[in-house]
Length: 86
Image 1 (cartoon, rainbow, N blue to C red):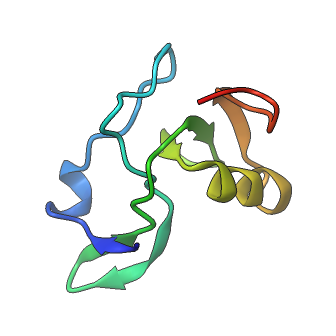
Image 2 (tube, one colour; image 1 turned 135 degrees about the horizontal axis):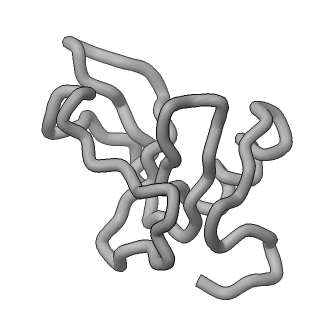
Image 3 (cartoon, rainbow, N blue to C red; image 1 turned 60 degrees about the horizontal axis):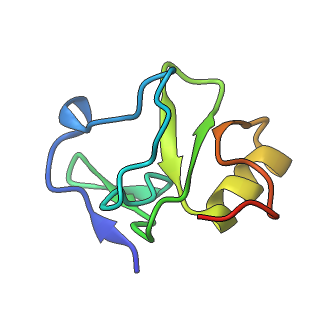
């Protein structure tokens, strides 16, 4: 269920380029829009790390990751492919 970020965009913790694990409590950081200077995030449990043409990678759930790889030029950094567990 989408939810509003608890912190402003400049305080959101994103994964690093060399992270080797998605934390168990990580939520999908794909956005649905913005309200009052805060992002509305997908917030489903994150299973992968995807890099977009942006300045940092994102934690994502599998459906958001698949969409971003197929339609927005995203690249899996960790956990890519539908056949992998997670």
